[in-house]
Image 1: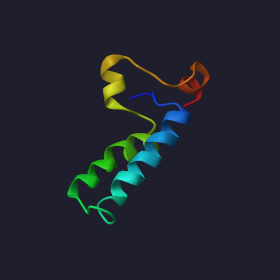
Image 2: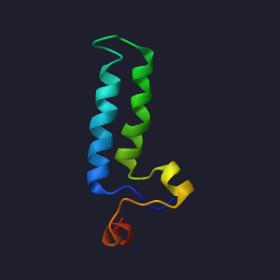
Image 3: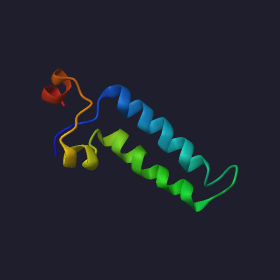
Image 4: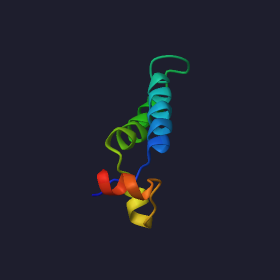
Length: 67
């Protein structure tokens, strides 16, 4: 799969993922906090399968080429 998550989108996904995972340890201590792995992994890898499915890309053209 080619890169389809831009830098800003990556940063937001990583922050959101870490915040959700923190819920598994702090606060309500809900196991649903582990769903934060999804945005964390898509942010770290720079690839979102849902974006690919719909043909969406938050990358600028230059980011897609250089990856």
